[in-house]
Image (cartoon, rainbow, N blue to C red; front, side, top):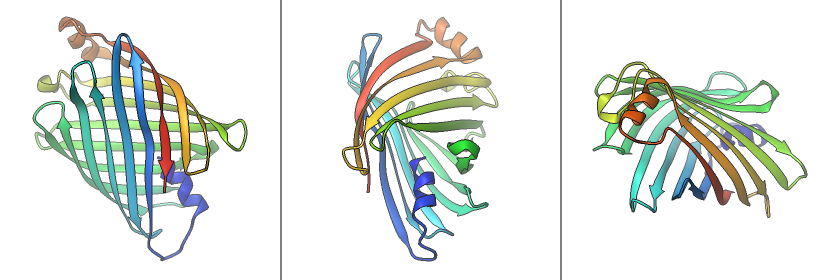
Length: 224
């Protein structure tokens, strides 16, 4: 989502450009568990047409396995000065044996400098879901920046094989404080809270799993 601000600051007309962004490369610890998380994206193209590649996931040190991993390949085109319409494919490598989805969404800069990303996903099995993300930054100095984030996942129907119930399934809130050694390189620390919701939380309780977690995080953010 950091690319939204980058667009406003770096216009190149019809000239092809690119951006590589590591928004989150972090280690986390909470509730006796340790994990590594990544959130990477890049694009190539002009102001009018762009190809996006995005990847995010999580590796559990306790279970010694990748517990979540997805890759999205999207084509984007502006629909307003502040928002792009994006469409493409998403593939989930974990959990499960892998599922593919068609993707349609919008990404951009909302009033008051909120960066938002809203996507609809239609899986190969016909399951419809959505993901809403928002971020906001507060600059204490030109180098010290607080980033607040929120994410909400929703399902249109039950997905028993993934232990997901219809309705809102999960919410995640984060606060990260970074120091930009250079604009392109910034270590950070923070805290993240997540919770399963509604019927999905009930399914987790029935299986003896936790429905809420708070984690301390530390990582590195970079772009090129």
